[in-house]
Image (cartoon, rainbow, N blue to C red; front, side, top):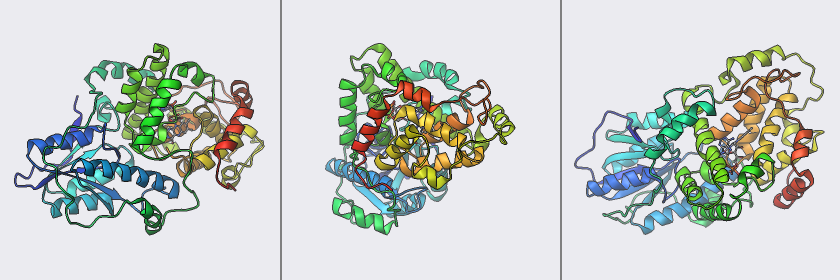
Length: 458
Ligand SMILES: Cc1cc2nc3c(=O)[nH]c(=O)nc-3n(C[C@H](O)[C@H](O)[C@H](O)COP(=O)(O)OP(=O)(O)OC[C@H]3O[C@@H](n4cnc5c(N)ncnc54)[C@H](O)[C@@H]3O)c2cc1C
């Protein structure tokens, strides 16, 4: 099983002056297999290492909430790296153009990049592979197994699980950062400042959408992510299995924003959980989500070219949804009404408010939330687009393989099977707010959301 892959046909430049790590998805200075690989290459070639990050003003769906979370996390990462003698060069540029230019300026011997499966991430890597004239190597860092290894779209978790079990022994869980043997000061070249007083002006320069403001619920950065992880492992993991199934408010680790931005990696989180003394059933249930379900989502985005569209759902689901396309829909809401959380359904409105105001929605209600959008939209196509649009706009963990797969599962039956037929849904699995009310303490949920929603909403 290959954890690294070469993305172009060039070799290492033997008279290069440094190795470059192009950081995009794994935005951390520790627990990062791509960074570690780059350090090994630099040490073996007796060269310093420089890290590049390309901040793209046109990043799909970026807004003040997601950008400030990312920039604040990068500030911590750059400080960590620079303390270790690894310069961090962030530039406001289209990332593949930026890495190609920096590689020429610094006379890099080779470039190492982390892994990403979304369309724009793959396009960036392919473009950089063409523009560079030295070797570009991608390292599996955001997943624990290489996404290509399974070789095709998995039909469901049951298909991927045995493959996972068989190959987990090949994973190196401890990804502590090796020492860089040839530290170097910052080269005198142009880069953007990541000092905290500059975040706001940086967002202005990037013309960030300010209508989705930063949230206070999640403090960005790896240090904070590790603190949450430690707290969850000591106080939340025992009981996770039952709490999750019962839609308990304590049934979530709330680590997804940190995983999405690569401030935490799956290796960090899995290792902490595996080493804990929580009951085996709880550890297994958590690792099923973090490893099997999460990497199943990456598998979908890697192997299904329509992962972000209703065109990508299974044929049986397409057929059943079109069979029920003309079913009467007792409630119909516009995108604006949904965005404002103005439906007749208190559970749904609370979930929507949680997402809009705090950048996160409780694990269990995400399923109900998307299914109700199907029920209340004029067509499944509109429902699909609306769910993705809201999810990607407001969730701090949005624009992620998990989000595309979550919507595909909830509205499109992906990784699921046909259920009993119902109006509008056809054979897509149905969920009701009443059954959620029976499981979940809704008044407590509402109080929690009120408490966390510390910004003016609508
Ligand atoms: C409609 C819908 C939309 C979703 N949108 C997103 C999204 O934009 N971003 C996102 O990260 N997740 C999304 N999910 C998947 C899942 O709900 C979240 O990953 C989870 O709620 C994150 O909260 P947590 O970290 O507290 O989860 P925990 O229960 O603590 O799980 C730990 C980690 O395991 C992984 N995980 C948990 N559940 C799933 C799952 N069902 N599929 C894949 N991985 C999982 C996540 O990386 C998560 O952070 C969506 C699910 C649905 C049904």
